[in-house]
Amino acid sequence: MTDNSCNGWTNYETYTVGSLVLNDEGLYLMACSYERNAVNPTWKGFVEFACLESLESEDVSFDDPNLDYNELDEVIQEINA
Image (tube, rainbow, N blue to C red; front, side):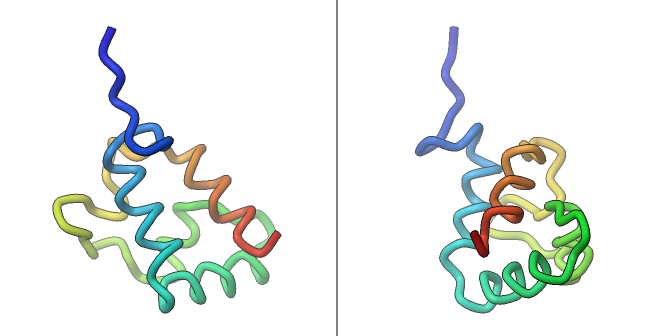
């Protein structure tokens, strides 16, 4: 069985965009603002809020079909915790 995890994240795609949001000050502050004001914060909601649908980080887009949306939802929901 092959382990496709990446640095504790589900996969490379999830690691790349999740790490970027947590380590880029501008994206982090947008995520904090979104999480504080959203009734039910989700990754997809954050991407729409921040207009990141067409933005790519290296070779991964913020709405890549390989993203683990459950894991990224947790990142957004816990960002101000």
